[in-house]
Image (tube, rainbow, N blue to C red; front, side, top):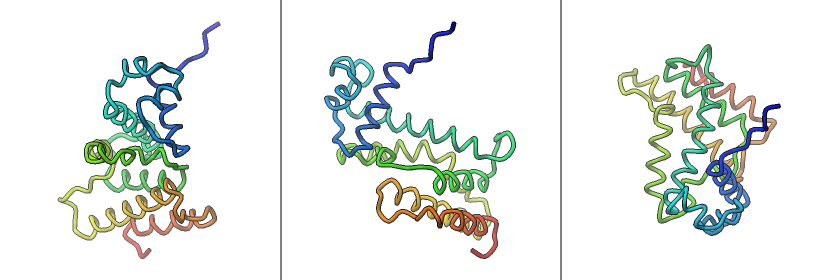
Length: 183
């Protein structure tokens, strides 16, 4: 009989830290260690500084998001067009659950600049709009991306999120815009 898969101590510590953020608790090396059931030195073996912990949290979240984005791409997901990438991001933003853990890049004012750069680096392959595209197509892609950003942020902050009953229509409207039709 094969033993049940157990997450690594590092991954378990990251999941525990994300759970802290989801509850609105303050994230520190001490609080993350307690939440993970580790000593502070045990946590610091994996994450020697709070910055290392938050960078790892960003990567942990984005890795999960990217798996979802890939699953939302058409076909085998290889070499997606800018429109297909933005559409996958749009669908994820409108149809998936988001919470305060998604705001990990903003969780510490002292690390905000470094974390925002890391978040941008990880999301750029999905959200970058090539400058060689026609201006009207670039504008549509950017507009849909910003609409998706807004839906995601409203959910993550719980500030006026889009009601569940309006989400299908929102997705359809954004897709019409993405396709070049009237929204």
